[in-house]
Length: 263
Ligand SMILES: C[S@@+](CC[C@H](N)C(=O)[O-])C[C@H]1O[C@@H](n2cnc3c(N)ncnc32)[C@H](O)[C@@H]1O
Image 1 (cartoon, rainbow, N blue to C red):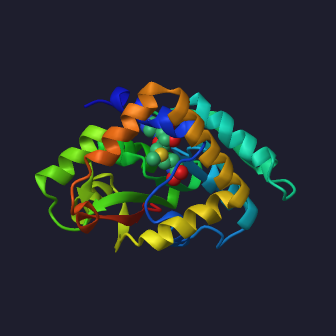
Image 2: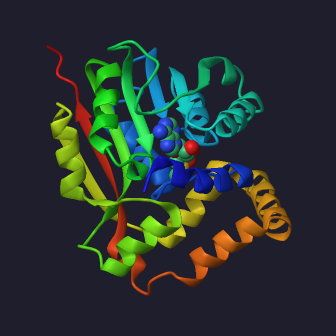
C-alpha cells in the first residue's frame, strides 16, 4: 500500500467538495484547545492536509491567528482558497496562506510555527513517525504538535482492519501506538484522549462545518458524480456493501498532542 493508492480516495473527496475527520467539530475544538491556540495573540498555526479548508477558515474566523494550510492535492488547495475567499467575515482570506505541499517534506524552515495540527492525515502514511518528526521540526521550541486520528478502541477484527486498508487505504492504530509515535518524534507532555464515535454528533458536526448551503452543494456534487462517473459508483458500491458488521464498535478517534522542548 502506498500513498499513490489513496490519491484516488482523496480525489473522490475533492470532487465532492467535502473532507472530514471522525469527531468533526468537537474534535477540532478539543485539538485546538489542547494545542493552546488562542491563548496568545498573533500565533502562527500550520494545518497539514487541510482538505477543502474548513479548519483553516474556522481558525481564522475564531482566533487572532495567522494560518498556513497545506495539502498534497492542488485541487484541495484550490477549494480551500475559494472557501476562505467567500467567508463572510472580513480579513479571513488575508490571514490564511494556502500552498500545495507534502506533509513528509514540508517546505518550511525549522521552528517557525506555534502549533502544527493535522486531522485524519497520518493514518494514510506508511512511515507515520517520519511525518510527525517533520511537524516537530517546523514547530517553535515550546510549541505544540496535535493530531486527530482514527483510532482502534479495541484490537480490531481482521475484517475491520482489512476493510479500511482496502477501501480508503487507512492504516489505523490503537491509542497507545499513536502516543508512542509522538514520543519517538521527541515530543513531551503528551496528552492522548480517545473517544467513541457518536453518529448524531458526526452529522451535526458536518452541518456546522459546511453550513446548510454548503452541505446541499456537497450532496449535489455527490449525486452528479454517482450518475456520471462509473469509477465513483464502483468505489461507493464497494465501500457500502462490504462494511463489516461491527466496524463502529472497533473504531473511534483520538486527539494526540505533544509539546516541543523549549530548550
Ligand atoms: C481525510 S482528508 C482530511 C482533510 C482535513 N484535514 C479535514 O479534516 O477535513 C485527508 C487529507 O490529507 C491530504 N493528504 C494526504 N496525504 C498527504 C500528504 N502526504 N501531504 C499533505 N496532505 C496530504 C489529502 O489530500 C486530504 O485532503
